[in-house]
Every structure is written in structure tokens, then in C-alpha cells.
Image (cartoon, rainbow, N blue to C red):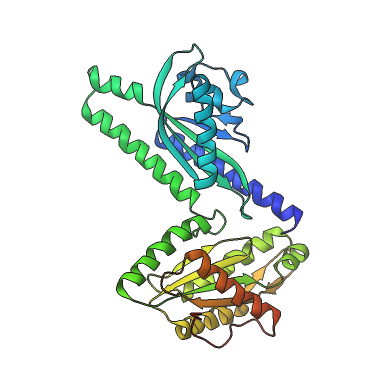
Length: 331
């Protein structure tokens, strides 16, 4: 991806972050929501943060979020939280936090990782729920219904954030993170019932030249066009995802290599038959597709690697359409 394209991708992902924060605030306005940079410094927060924590914006913006944790042990916990979020994409735990006046309260802290399309980490979204307030509501006259309602609000907000984290913003289909969860589920089912499973690994040919010649807006429209053509070839139960700038995958349950090859051929034909409009011209697009049939006990990473290798072989040879179907190697 070009420098301009990478910058645009990061801007889109920061827009994703903003959208996630806004959605959380609308779902559960009692939550404290932060955006953090790569180092854990607070870059923005919602209005509720000042009310709960007692800080004015100039006192907290730009500071390391560990200042909210209590004592030296708290600083270690903050670093651990960020490390877990970096490695596992999500951190969630109940911890002790400190307000500006040094009063402490028990809170549930959730930190979600935000990645650019090229996989680079570009920041975090942190959500804080004051559990002390919730306990007081129930103990001092608050009804169970109110408490349960707030819990449902939080669950809805977390679910919305999870969906945003697993979805590609431009195309609306799963990203690599979301695809991995779905693929592992299908692989477990295929293993349990001894059923075949295949995968297609697709990329757009000369996509950089499309961006360079027609502009990034046209490139985005080409990406959406490819997704639409792939969607038209999907059956119920198939899983499609965007895993990179111009890279897509389609998981095909109940499909052997020969059946996957037919789907791949149809996608190639559908894409080249479609057109994309730009300010300068209308252009057509071609794709290359590699495929692999899953081997029992093979990991999703290994399956993707084999399909990627098949794609590389196609792009290194002649033509854009997939090769003749073949059974997976078991050596």
C-alpha cells in the first residue's frame, strides 16, 4: 500500500475509533470512555469522565492512563492491561482506580485494540464502569430492575464495540480478527462431523495502479464491487472477510477443492464482467485467487498460508483465474 493509502487507512480506522466511542456513549451514557494512543496516553474522552474522575480535560489529556490506577501496583497493572490488549486485542478486568481527590473506587475496565488495515496497532479504546455506583444503587433503594437494565446497557455497548472491532469499516464484512473467530468455529464443526472445508484467498490485480490512476475513492469503489460480486457467489454458511488492503478470503464449508475451484472461477468471471466508475473513466478489474482444502488439525494460520502460497503461484504464472482443483498435500 502506498504512503498516501496507508495514511488514509489509519484515518479511516481512527474514524472507526470515534464511531465506537460515540456508540458506547449513546448505549450507556454513564460509562467513562477514553481513546488512547500507542503509548497509553489519553487523546480524548467523553464528558462523563470528568464527572466521575474529577479531572478537567487539560489535567488528563496527554497523560498516561496509568495515572488513574492506584499506587505503584496500579501502575504495573495499567502496563499489564495495555500489554494484554496489545497481545490479545482485548483486556477486561475489575480493578481499583483513583479519582483526582485520591478517593478510590472499584471499576470494570475494558480496553480494545484498534488496528489499521495493514495490521499495525494505531491505538486503544478504554471503557470504565464505576461498579461502586452500581452497588450503591441496589443497596440504597435502587431496584434490581434498574441494575439489570444498566447491565444490559453495558452488555449492549460491549457487544456493539466487539462488532465494530470485528468488522471492516469500508466494506461492512468481517476483518481478519472477525474472520478468525468464525473460521475456527467452522473448522471445529468440520472436524467433529468429518466434513470437508476449503478456503479461497483473493486479491485485486494491480490494485496500486488503480489507486494511482483513478484515485483512492475509485479504489474504494473497486473494493466494494469485488465484495458485492463475491457475495453473489456465496451460499448460506459461507464466510467472507477482508483481511488486508486488497486481500479477501472466503471460507467454504462442506466444499472440497473441486467445488471451491468452481466458486473461484465464478468470482473471477463476475468481477471482470463488472465495471467501476471514477471521475476520469469507467474501468474493469480482475482478481487472482488461490485456494486450499483444509487438513484435519490444521490451524487457521496454516490454512491461510497455503491458500496465500497458491495465490502467489497464480500471480507468478499466467492468467488470473484459479488453477485446476487439487487435493491438499498431507506430507
